[in-house]
Length: 239
Image (tube, rainbow, N blue to C red; front, top):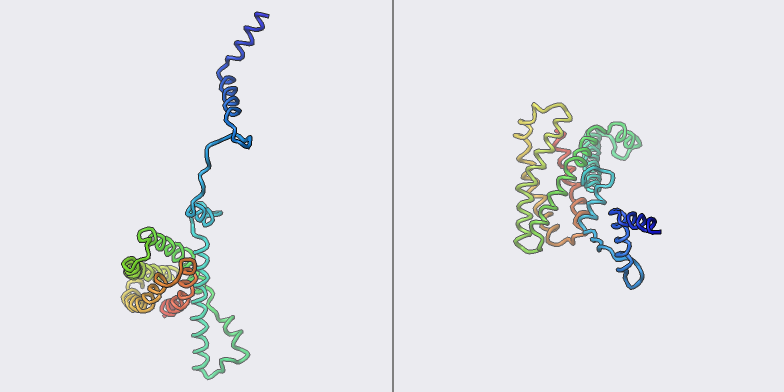
């Protein structure tokens, strides 16, 4: 019996088994009132974390998929409106009736789908993610709704985001067309008029957006206004 006892005592004193037994004893010693074992409190997910998870589902990085799809659909819509308007004007100049039976087939068959895809790809890969990151940056730097912050956001939106958008869309369009050599002349002839027209359009829109529109409705408001801007950009780029 002494030998067996000594052997049992040696087996019991193994370090791994002692740690396992001690952890079990500690677990039984600290139950909560409802009989469950207490553990470290779980950290709640922040709103930014949950938003990032929703944005990056299926993507290796935090890609704003929803904003990218929205921007792509709106740039596609703006280009489609520009093409349809130009075709209707051309038919009227030729003396054809705009409501004739051949109007719909003419609009579908002669639609420049590659041009529409070019604009949609710009919205998906560049404008959507870029503008989303920019507005997040502005909200982090100036979270309070004051007159100074409103003025700063509107001014920064025009002098930083505006020129960047025009420079990128012109370069993206010429890259698709294989006309990068013509990009300097495109900047010289069309960039400044487009930027000045953007000031006239986006300054009032930005003031209304940052000053009057509630936060949950801002994306929808800016998206609706951007259809007209995308129409103007598509018309300018097709010259």
